[in-house]
Image (tube, rainbow, N blue to C red; front, side, top):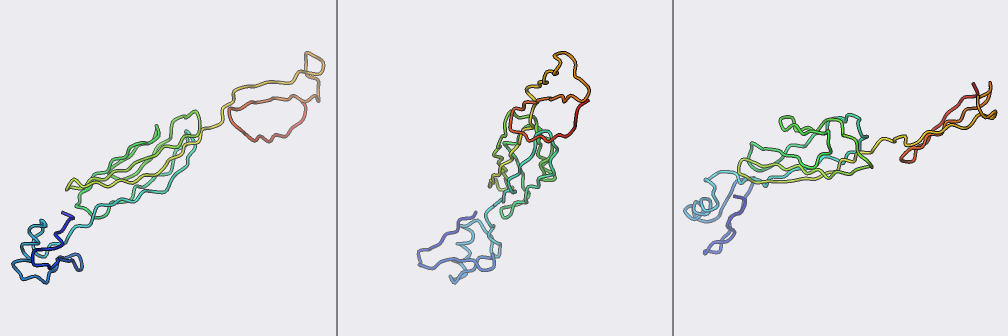
Length: 180
């Protein structure tokens, strides 16, 4: 439907102005050109189906995300059907509202998920757009240790207790305090 015959045996062309096909050919030839293009006289030529991707998103594991809105498709022939693939676990797409929401599941490292949105129109034309959702994992404690008391058995009043936590990734910790 989006392809129009450009040249005819008589050497004239069919063009469109304002979205409606116009021709300088005699009326019979113009009608033949429209019909061969699958259009009725005066019918607008449909624009190609297109879709714009949302901006890339970065979220923390286990933290609910603000809703990601999938932009509406343009062109083509409505109604449209949307599908989304590649979402990180814990996120879901709702077609009726064109939104992605949820709380991403645990990951073992920062994970970038390429997400593909595909729209199909009623004439079976499709368009796709991609964006990334990055899920950053939360730091996990993988080791805990205490310093030994100076007396070798019991911490004395005023003696500092040093607790060392080891994480699975770089973490900055700031603490204050003094002895018991």
